Image (cartoon, rainbow, N blue to C red; front, top):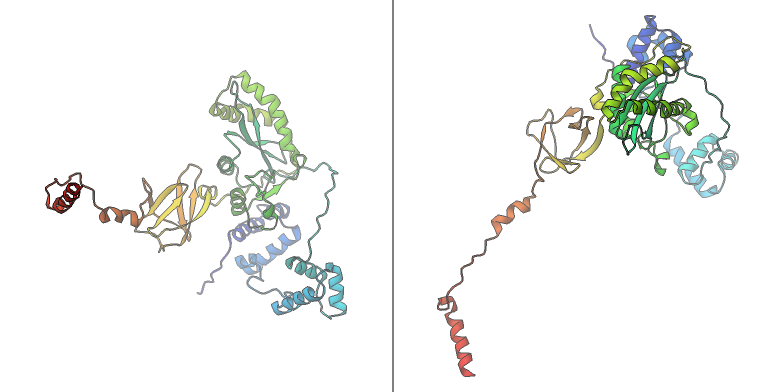
Length: 425
């Protein structure tokens, strides 16, 4: 019997798992729609399609096909030429009207707008955001959204420098799900925080956070280049966790209110216990303070479900800083002033000048990866010498301290000439 091979992305495989749970009645349609971030009607369509076609039904039927409404590139180039020659100073609406009435070119007004933006003939206008704010309702179920932030304060007793406290609070229940002291709000501490969180609870559907540099590229070019992602954004995308960036502290008010409570209560509690180290502070948070806080301030959510999803990825690999490097002619990879020599035996063919990905794990361990395989290597104790440097000692000769005597044949002629000159005076 011939078996058909179906290729799926990781996201489609997770969708199939959720739809199968819906078919087996482990969850209802509302829970599935929240986990898939789709409307209930679309979830029903997916369920019916999987029942009819099997796992193949989870894959979009238009994959690999050209869109029915896509214009031919020759036609697009023609429209761009007409706009540049006749209507370069027009607004998109005016250009659309003239293209329709005078040039008899049938094209959508918004398509004309996009073409003029691409040709640098029009700059899109940004709408002003109103300052009006209203209270947002809590999410229905635990794990539906986590609010996350970091706070710098003099948390420890008798320590002059500030410490960073990373925390997450569940939006539906108001429970502190994770609270951890770190040296900073940098990428490695944040990776460590969320690795421990996912190992404990699973993957949340969404994380609500601010626009700190660890979580968002704040360079002006990042608005036009959507491929500019931080290491944390890349990891969240790989885990299929939605990141929501708040435009103001008020937007993520629950976590901001938590900091106000902690700065009032936690500092006094730790000073009362004379806690001076981060290790003691983290132990106190885990064993005493967080359970007490949740028993006092947590609320009953509307829903009773836990919407955390099971993790099927290698968190050590996901939560690592990844940088691209080039293999040298001597099969050495340079990264952060360290030199890694690739071994002769590798799981795949490795070529000079090819690209590799260097992963720095939370523990500080370094891995080198190419085309899905980890390469074998060892660290060189010093910078490898260039070929010309190794040849220099063979091309030079050490100078000798010996000097020939005055009556040496090498000097006989010169001495006689010098004596003749002296005697002639």
